[in-house]
Length: 205
Image (cartoon, rainbow, N blue to C red):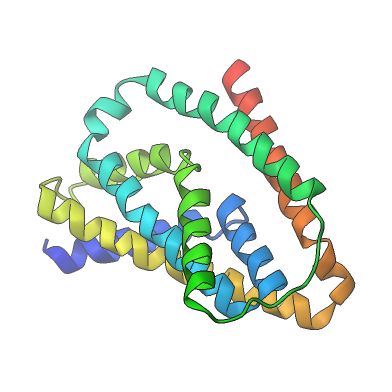
């Protein structure tokens, strides 16, 4: 049970967990539609970068997080208004298709957007707590810092592959339908709001 094994488990677990349509990957697809696939990939790099720290924290403190349900409830409470605000922003902002120039400043901004969207998505932490708890109880991973780091690097690889797929999906949509592309931002906004509402139901009921 070495570093490569932990890397593979992190990669597979994050790939499967990130593959369904969610707030981060649809944001990357929307960025790719509006500003081009390069901008989407740069945003994906920023998003995947943050996933390392979320996975590392989840596995390093999973004994505390998994035995204290109030932690998850607090995360849900924090995420509800954040998702509502982001959703309203996407719904009401002016939609346009404007490929971004390939400048260093645009790269930094795109990377920062990926970092921000993922950092605000605290719901990923309970997922990695569950995944790590399951794999550890099955004897598939160890929780020493070096193995947690290898697992977290795998998480970065798995999530980046999914984000890359969504960036390419954004370009496909852009080529197929310009009219649909103009409404991509509103779709992202509705997804954010829908997730906020679902989390509110989860918290109160």
